[in-house]
Length: 458
Image (cartoon, rainbow, N blue to C red; front, side, top):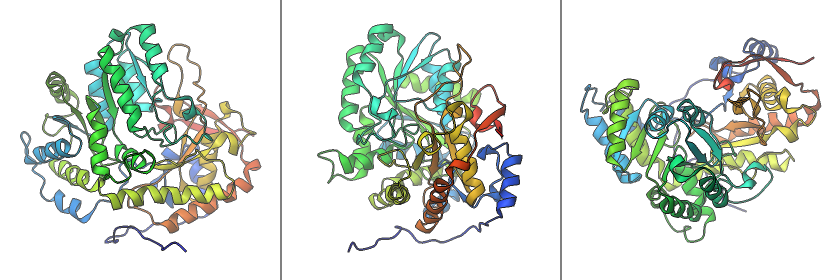
């Protein structure tokens, strides 16, 4: 019998949560337009909407808040953040931003010009939007296995080198300002990229004079998967693996609200001084001074402390295994999920879960709403709604993956909460034929999944 193990932390403070009645939740989701983003958090029992900014900070992070230097310029807290980024990530320069999309905005404005192409290992919503707003075109160069939820490839986030080189041959390297490699790949189900693949991408970039950029939002989780799955890394600490991963990049965008274990904040990091200078010029316009970038000093202190905590091997092992604990319960019940189980979430395959609902009736959106009604668990859609519309034709983008993301906040819930989630999903699986599709009754022009509204199809 395997010896049981527990969370590598003690609980010091608690926040009460409440279970509501089914009738209450039916009214709440109706008033929210069947969009879980529009629910009030006080009406949610277990909140798996996102792992962005929903983390529980440590006692040392709370202590660091009190050390924040709130000077308008040259704050001591900025230099502590800069030191942490240099030590753990290895980049020379850092510009703080209010969150990750602030960093995406800056680098898109600096590097992209109209007519450019930006390859990436599957799109992410805000990243692609910033690229398109600058006149660029996103091109997916992820391996084909990433689009198959049942494929068991250990590194489904890998860049397909042949696709990348075919794009270079087609449009020319001068039309590709950088390749954006996400670690891990959120929209593919939290899937990692191998170190070997990063080396190969770097070789192609060097051969053609193309920058290699990273969305490093969940890079620590990616490092843990490398430790588990890639030969030669089993005995290396996650901190060392992360540093090697980052060494292949020219810079990164970072949402500190994920890996860095905080509730707000992000940064843009780079090695080229001219990009630093441009970023400082832009951040003053859109975020704040280059030494605070839309953050309070206390926020930068918490991020700096979180950077050191995130590479603790015991912490990240527990993080990955809690997600796996939930996913394995669903697999044992025969429920279709993205495999292998990802780093930050379990992704339900809504196509296979609700085959009677066509994709243009938003099956993942319907399933997320049904989950909330059944148990008060809030999840989110990652399918046709998130994919948005083709900017040229105005038609829906139809992604191959139609998913519901059960996203686990860091250090927030126990495995007992995961048991509640698993029970509800299994109950819905038995009742799946009763779930109906939806029609969209309000659609914003961009990032529609945040605020779109729906109604059931009778």
